[in-house]
Image (cartoon, rainbow, N blue to C red):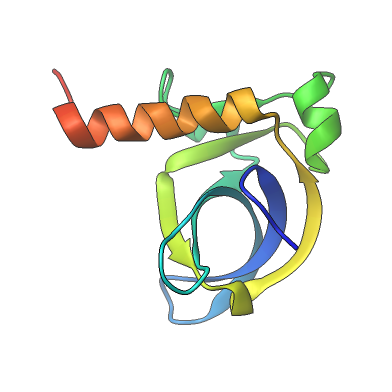
Length: 116
């Protein structure tokens, strides 16, 4: 059974119409059919948006819990709904405080919009 905060491998749709196995964070279970709002996880650290994405650097307790293989970022802008049928395996999890921080950032953005 998977739950919010789990880091899993999932089949994600790609721009070319195919699908690729990628790590994702289960951010929040959605009402209805058990799908999850997920955030993609990337090792492309240069793509991180300060104050928006969540870094998971090697050597931290978060990294050790996550099951990731290298320093990564949880990309809040790479969010999508994911059905359970696309979930493959569980790698680890992130602490509740990390998940809540991402949820709060997304909620604030949806409520207030981006301030320039």
